[in-house]
Length: 158
Image (cartoon, rainbow, N blue to C red; front, side, top):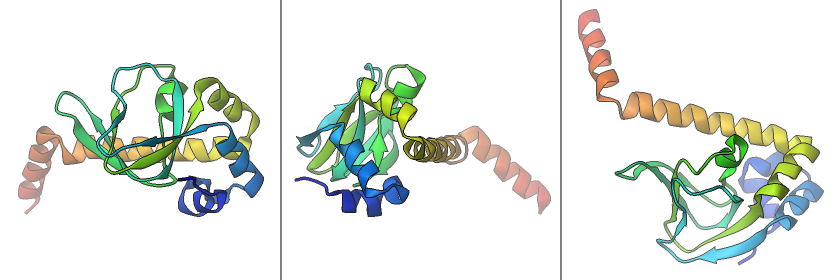
C-alpha cells in the first residue's frame, strides 16, 4: 500500500508543505510493510532511520513494563529524537495492525534538516509538542508522588 502525497499532506504535520516538498521527502525513504504486532524499533538500539507512517497504527512504549506513551497513526512520524540527539532509541515502537512506513536513512534525514527549512520548522514544532505531551504524562498522569501532593493541596484549599 502506497501513501499518496495528498494523504500525507492532509493527515499529518506535513499539512503546510507543498507537493514538491512532500514528494521529495517521501522519495528519500523506502516503503516497508509490517504485520500486526511487529516490533519496528526496540528501546536501546541504535538510530538508523526516521519513520513516516503511511498506513496503520503503532504504539510507542518505554521501560521495563513497556508503559504506553502514545499511539501514532497514518501521517505521523517517529525515530527523529534519537537521530537528533545522536543517541540510542529511548522507546520501542510496535505495530497495532498491519502498518506501512517510509524509512528514511539517518544521513538523508540529517541532510533534509539542513536543506529544507519548512520541514525543519515543522519537525521542531512536532518534537516540542511530543516532549510537552510526554512530560505531562509522566509528571501528572503516572507519578504517585505528584498525585499525592495535588490531592493534599486540594484538600488543604477546601
